[in-house]
Length: 308
Length: 308
Image (cartoon, rainbow over all chains, first blue to last red; front, side, top):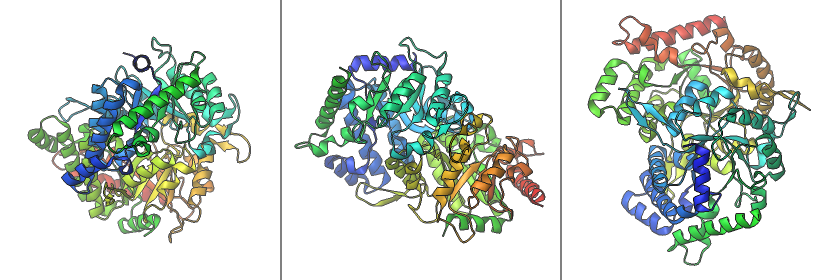
């Protein structure tokens, strides 16, 4: 099934366009999980991986009926090496078991022959020494960086049916404009981000799902709403993955500014506000799953109100 | 010790500016290693990881006296998940034990708070649940993508002494020009790659080692020699990591075109020509380490001849 159709169906089922960033950090782990992991493993990588996995599974179980996707941030797991990556693998498997699409936020990029290996790692399967196909992470979507152009992108397209990518176009961080806002000269003049948007639109050509969106998405930060509106004109059939809502300062209206006329085409991410919700809730340490669910419900309500 | 000084010392010791890409793939594994791993683990990820590690250790042992650095390509390991990453960790530890600097070729990039986790993963250490510092991969250098601007870069600078980064400026692949050659308008007009080069020069300001080079390097492909010469003008104190020599078509003269006037400032990478040397050598399957060493010696000779 086409990746954009799977995502659209997940949004309809959950009545949500929210994506929850599964970005665990030691400071976000509830005390009981922390104590259990430390007692079992000492203050080691194995303890972190064990606590992260228990936290992620609990978050997924509590929220899976109310979110459109989960987006684990690779860096949070890679910081704990091979044990961290094993935790990520188990996390993705758990989300898939609950039927929720997964966006691996890895921002990978390389020349063609290497990009093939990243595609195997995140979206497909690699070959064993004897030729047996060995499954990779098998995420639904992967974030990628398009600085290397087409031959760093095409290996991700169509390796396995049902997978898609989000290409960084306009990122949510304060310094994103240092390169992305520089103006290009010549034909198709405009900011570098618009040049990237034109490439993204080209890569997605002829790849529409039944929902009218294609499987070459774009990362467009909530923190630059005017640019998101302009980028939508350049990428009418593209799913926007929108970081920057909430903790980074983007409002619901900001996050929705790249929507299509019918309100479709955006997947809004929130991470810290959901994972850390228990820290601000009454008796939150004991009821951290409830706090996460309440934060998701509040996010869905906030987005629904802004959509009108 | 400053990362550029460590690298310069390694070049002097080995009388080489060669970097060997440790990019193992099943097709490059000599038959005896393949058979051993398959017998022990079956056709699994564990077999791949075991064979890759035996191959890498053998390559490092055979060539460590004659190369300036090793550059493992993350994608080759990530394709085999947590087992692949464990193999990478053991590979890096082995190279360090042999005293050769390691460049982790990961091309990581993200917003500031996330880039910190990547810095921990590759160059520093992360915190455990109880606050114990947990060592990461501890590579000497990391390749990064600068599309997100300064706040995606600064977390990598100075987290731990003795570490450096190489920022993608002009990549070696055929489609690199789709974005990197687009012309920027306004002040400092010129290709996007030159805009990135100016950012790189800025990030490296005030970070010189005793060798006269700083620890914010640049990736500049051997396949675009005229652009490499121009980029050197913009980044006079920057170490260039040069992919594209050999298998990708760059000659020794091409690869050296970004050198400084005294010949310094370039680290030339080769991967397939070294790792696959046994496949073209007489009795290569039995003497794959000798074949790799011979290929390294030939590469050093080729580069020395071109340097004159």
